[in-house]
Image (tube, rainbow, N blue to C red):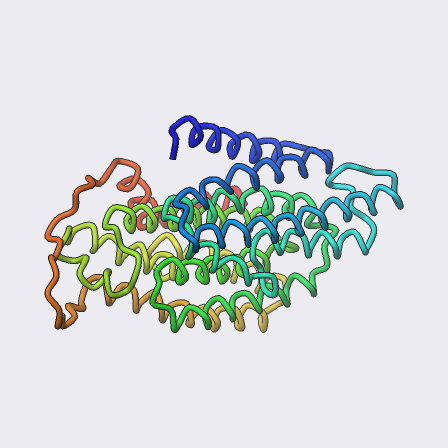
Length: 346
């Protein structure tokens, strides 16, 4: 891809995200989301592979539908209340349409159908952007409108997302699809606490972004796309593969790693709100995700598969591990001791 075109896309992504998260007016938020959508499309389709073209088409159609619903929701609210302020969402129909629009943009169940397919057709770097940066503006809109949203609807979508994200990830052999369903399951955790403590939603999103970014950087370094390729990754760089296993367990939410922190805080807050059954349900559903995280960790560090065909085995990698990968993996594993500070802030 042309470096100038890549720079324009990256700048537009930064601009669109900044406009959406800093706006108070619905039209400005919509403009920021549209800039983001148009900026990411060239990055998805840059390989010119038929699967990449298909992914970019699916992404464009779903995001255009979501943007239309969001615009219609804001116009309906302005028609009935005379308010274009994001925090002044009062009409029930507008709240329902907004929940649908943001759920489509995030990939929440039952609007998740596009997300695994788009990630499967994209490069690792684009997958990282789709799973982290592109979810920040919709999460911010959810955060700003959280007092107006329907708690029952959000709770049902959150439980469904955690269940489907864990269930559908069990039988996948493509790493990008596994991480897509992992993202859907984590969005369920963020959504279930949105009404009761929106700050915890942002905390969970930030920690998810750190951990997922570390995993994508490691996969990009080892050039791993499938489980069968991951089984031979140990011979390339054993220390990085060991760190990869710990980062996967952190994403699964095992203590004493960083990923345990948001789940711990969310379960505690749900229990305080008297929602013990909901907290128990989503905790049990997270065991589905734990299974395929353990499967990935097992394939990466323990399994050496039999190979019946002749091929050139890679004994080392050509790309060095950069400082960003090192920083992200360190944070995704060792951030749990900072939990008292997070308690104080949230």
